[in-house]
Structures are given as structure tokens and as C-alpha cells.
Length: 254
Image: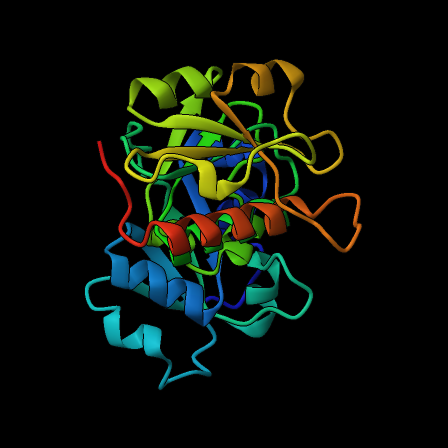
């Protein structure tokens, strides 16, 4: 059992809350029984799991065979946690290599900076069978806060790196690009049902850059008869994915 929060192994793991350290080590932290169980069940590269041992019947223990499990005190778990009242276990995950874009329905995060919004969109993508693309100027989608909001979505769908020209990469992969905008766009039911669509989602206050909207093949606007000025980015993206999947239950693939 590790009883000191100054243990070198614990100090090194706690540094994974920093973006630079995650980038250097290609590792991150998972917190909570559901998230750790999702990662283990998916075959993700979970390097070590820290637990207080207070959850002997937890579901994650059913799929933990072959992984290193280290018992720690509650004080040590607090050192590793990113929440005020952590729910163990906490695991160190090797961040997977991002796959190349493919021609299937996609939600692309372009300049989105809020961890909660990013995680919620990835969670919805996992529910509605959309792959996720991430542009260069976007929040680190493997940050612990994003993983918590994603609730396992990272382990259900591909999370791709779109670089600094996401529209070009998506279109080369066979997707038709559709900017989510607050006004003057078409309805989702007018999009071609037999070809992959990539919904591009921008940041909460500014939305997508104007040049990105112009370059997209379509602009899509969600009807809001109640008179609201706009929707939260994650809510808008989730509604768009739901509506597309309602209209096209089997995703088009190229």
C-alpha cells in the first residue's frame, strides 16, 4: 500500500493533470468506477489502477485481469484526483494513437475550448454512432475533465486528429462538411442521406470561424421556434447527431 502523497509514483501520476505532461508522456488519468470499467472493457492501455480497496465488488474488478492494481490511502487518492470528493479508482491511461479520418458520419470540434462541452459531445457521439474529429486549436480531449464528461464515449467511437485544416481532411476522407450555425442554414433533413456528413462545431461564444463556415459545403441551423437566441454548443451538436441518426439509422460509409 502507498501511504505517502510524496511517493514518486504518485507525484508523477498527479502531474498528468497538466497538459504539457500529458503531451510528453502520452498518458492521462481516468477517475471513477464507470470510466475505468469502460476503458478496461474496451481493451484500452490502462497502465496502473489506484484504489483504496473500499469497492471489492465494483464492476471494473471483473475486467481488471492482467493490470497492475495499487492500493493507496484516501489521502493519496485525493492527491491524484481532479475532483473535490473523488470516487476511486483512479487509473493511468496510455493515450491511444489517433486514427486517420474515414468516410462516415462525424462530429468535428473546431476551436471548442470548454472541457465539459467537448466531453458531452463525445458522449453523445458514442450514443449516436458518430466518429469524433478534433482540430488543432481545440481543448485537449484526453484531459481528465473531458474524459469525465465523456462518460466512456472516448472508448466507443474513434477520436481522430484533424490537424489545422479539418475541412480538407474530412472532405478527402469522403465526408461532406456541414457547419452548425445559429441562423441562415438548411435543415438537417435536407442533407444527403446516402453520403457521410461531418458536423463542424465551434466554440461557445464565437461559434465557427467565418472562413470555416464559408468553406463548408452546407450550413445547418436547428429550428428554435421558442425564440432562444442560441443553444449551448454541446446541446446543439447532440441534437444534430440525434436528428441525423433518426433520419439515417444506418450511417453512410465511404
